[in-house]
Amino acid sequence: MLVSAKEMLNKAREGKYAVGQFNINNLEWTKAILLTAQECNSPVILGVSEGAGKYMCGYKTVVGMVKGMIEELNITVPVALHLDHGSFEGAKACINAGFSSVMFDGSHYSIEENIAKTTELVNACNVLGLSLEAEVGSIGGEEDGVIGAGECADPDECKAIADLGVTMLAAGIGNIHGKYPENWAGLSFETLAAVKEKVGDMPLVLHGGTGIPADMIKKAISLGVAKINVNTECQLAFQAATREYIEAGKDQQGKGFDPRKLLAPGFEAIKATVKEKMELFGSIGKA
Ligand code: 13P
Image 1 (cartoon, rainbow, N blue to C red):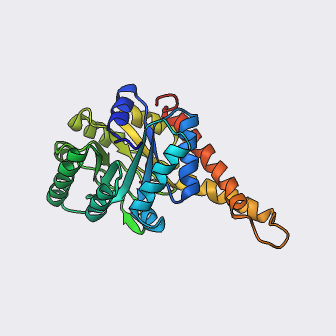
Image 2: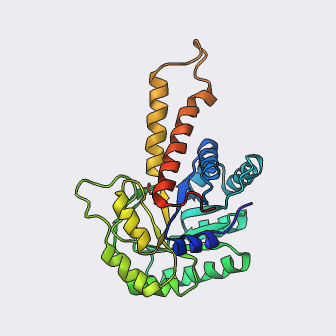
Image 3: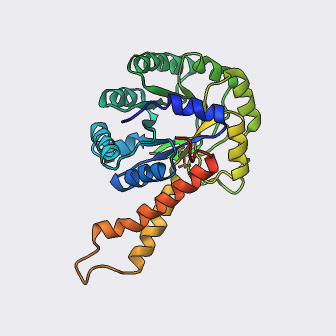
């Protein structure tokens, strides 16, 4: 069964750990993340970008695949299926398709429009018991063709959005999607502390979880971060393992690669990456 992310994130915030959001792109990624969560007895959030949703034939297909896997793999840990960086239309489509959680990224709108659109989604999610993530201050880097500048959020704007009744809030604190550049200034803990001061107990979300040093992750968790998103690191691990397999040239005597064997090393690499992150975030054994 899919669950809203609300309870798992409130528990994480109280227990001073974070739940990982790992983005899915296909069956292998989904299976690897679900099995690792079960083996680690950890709650987990499956993130789906709009691009990945389209790639996997649409949101209804994603819901069907994930629900089917939870049942057939006997997954008993809490699993939330969450739209990542959704548009307003995308969020509504995922709510209708059966997602248990959505993010509406209104950070590129004026704060007034962000508030108006977020309010509408708060009402829809409340009626259906779904969790809703809102964003203030855009996250840097590029994701699905959208490029953000890596802003630091205005704490007063964070409070205005948090007060609407969202479940969790992504506040830009100098974090970036993808690899961090050599000259990256690091996370702005000053901003994070100021946001926390304004929003109180609201679970905070840290995007761009790839490549943030462990000490910064721990400090962010101590300042109210309860959800950390990871995508690029799984992608890099998957790529390296798949490349190694292909370069070893073990195809089947001229019949080409067996597709299941071809994807197996990448699958194992994702499992290892997810486990490592769950250890770092402190979510192991917290299901
Ligand atoms: P990375 O790709 O940097 O791990 O970030 C993922 C993310 O924040 C998804 O929203």
